[in-house]
Image (spheres, rainbow, N blue to C red):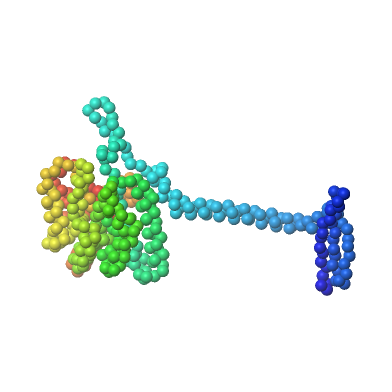
Length: 360
């Protein structure tokens, strides 16, 4: 205790008087103590902080309130990005169109009955991330983290945004994988399992109220220069997703799906000739129903053709890459024009629309 002075404050209240006094016990270095009587007001003055201390306390309070405010903003931002943003399309920004049908009379009927139309949701180019995407080791932590969050984003978008519209048909336009043609069988099966989980394919394909159709993309089977050397990429694709060229009917419309990646291949090859033979057979069908042609790679159009107001790039010209040793196609962004090539759009149809989706 030597060199120190300590004090202890006690509050005393009289029984008859309302006046409150305090006793200040001073502990002196000589180990003796002295009792000093003081009023509560005097003690409050003794204990009250100085002006600088009050300023520091006030600044700490402001910082604490600012920290709480910013924490709330951060939490709301996370909730919006991870949850609420996926609800926006179905709640406010998107809806199925309600067409009007004009009858012979002057009355107009709104097509609200589910039997009047078929609702189709189109999904394209998920391109699940794999070792070819970022040139990372197949089992690296960085790749697994990237796969986890990209898969999570797509699954939430699909379940909370797409399925909330309750479509009758899901139409996948290809490019399910990123490096699909060059993945080993084990890697391909692993990516396939992720694809099924993201889009709940095992459940949806067993659901009677929803039909699912698939088109092949260049990231799934590649082009001629690849599948001519490794035909197993087409085999494993067809074993899982079915035929690459086929026709199906929805309502009063025939949909014709073709593997456009094979159209510019060697006409003597089995893969390319099979696609053109399918087109020829469909053209001989004299059905009067409206037809829609579905492709992943768009059909030929001249350079400098406008892409329309909804495309980020107003003009996309032909890009094609060929192998130097045999001129087989390594990459193309749409089908080429060739004087000895037939038009891939089927003949003898009442009306035809061409619908292609391939994100560059």
